[in-house]
Length: 185
Image (cartoon, rainbow, N blue to C red):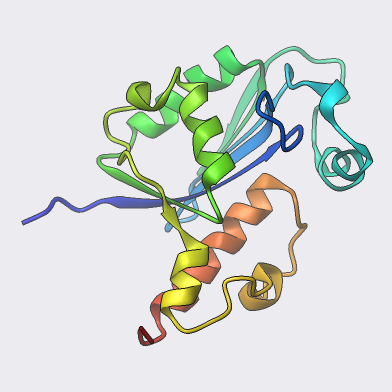
């Protein structure tokens, strides 16, 4: 019998589609609406093209403010701003509050690599995090839908695209709606 796992829904925003890209923001949301949202002070701003400036940085909360570090917990919502080391420490504490964790993301090739890199590589992610992410795009296919289906439209949430927290919420809602549909494969 397998142990129960908490499902976390993750999204990241990053400085570009390059091998040395850096995290701008990261969000995780569980099924009970507990969330972790972080923005990074040490992302590679010079890598950001106009699209990223207009569609990602424009939705950031603290990146252009004169602050170094902070963490704020408001009920079940934790918000963090700082460099990779600070965010990793805060995220490690947040993840430690869970038992076994399974992460879902949307086309997680970049997200998962950057998540693992934050901890020092795939072998250094917290032990309670399942080593393999699950992909919502694959779940769309299994349920007989086009994997390119608009997550915003399907979720019906009307949130801000390319904000990691809003995108994580959309991923969670898509997952919940998809799990109610019969498999089509």
